[in-house]
Image 1: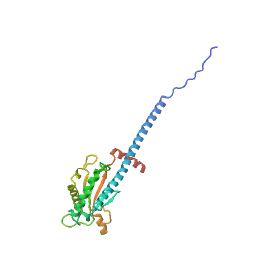
Image 2: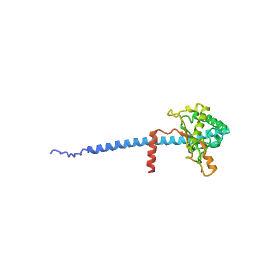
Image 3: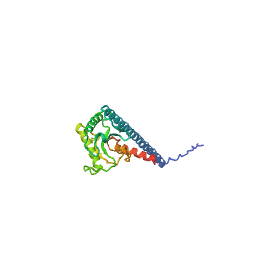
Image 4: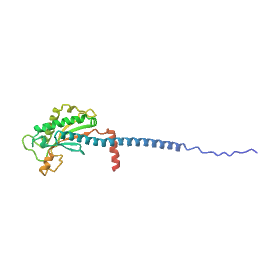
Length: 234
């Protein structure tokens, strides 16, 4: 008697199922790569932003110490990156010509600033230095300036001219993009730091601010930071 062999046919695996499985595996791999890229760039960008704040605070403290050694008292606002000089040190009320004593202060400030910008820990880290003029909210009426806008702007300009003429290398300091870093602006009474309702407050508001803006992460990294922060807050 001839033996019969029982043969069971195994159905071929569905080719469509195989294709979908391969596709999902590929998409998962791409997702992991993209996620890793986002995490890496987000970490680098946030680390640079944090380090910028630390470096800027160190820069301000360095300048404050060096100026105090010269007998010059200035205040610093580390949170906003500002070195601040009151009006009375530099100008007479309602005028924009730098007083003789103020010229000494500004020239020494420029020398300290030049030293700071060349120090290894700060070199190439500053993007822009804004020299800002500010006033109180009392309208000016002295026949020289038509408004506090002109007064604040002229004071900022004269501060810069005094500083740069005594320290001729300052105007040529570049940031990491090769752009010159100094800028001058006047804000009149639009950015008070104290109440204008008291004489003490108005005196505080009449000032010259030296504001430091540090080199930010790349635009691509910053866009990732903004995207992630937006997703986390929504």
